[in-house]
Length: 200
Image (cartoon, rainbow, N blue to C red):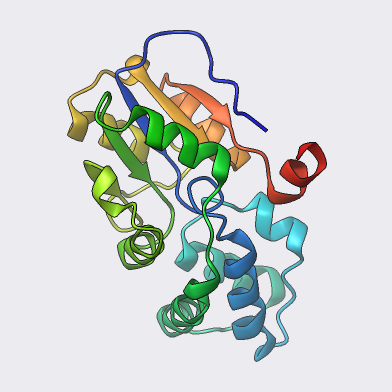
């Protein structure tokens, strides 16, 4: 299956990481389920995917409020992150997106714009030997407002020295597409794993 890009000449490509460059969402979900099970905290898969792009600490705080729990945010975040790192040997790339990275590398600058921590993004990209393709990484902790707010995408465009309207965003999550639109950027939606399987 090929990704159809919108028409136009783009001067930079901005990529979400999890579920867009790397097919990491299933591994992240396993990590979440393992850590949250200690608190008997429900986190349905559908909800997990709909919150794609939300920073980890925010997910924990939101689940605490939703279920009346008091999971320690920082400690839970670290444990979830470590659990994900343990699963990294199983990580694969999203072929349709890797194809565009390979074809356009060196022609336009690339940035990663992610709700994950820098450690997590770096580990994911390193495991697929892709880290050196990106001029800059904008990760959780770099910005104040997460997606669907456009702040992170605008920060990436600014770091690359490219006008927002000249950027193309690759995203798998609806809140990421909303953030790109709010930033005045064109976007291409990367299908979820089960959607890719249907077409492939």
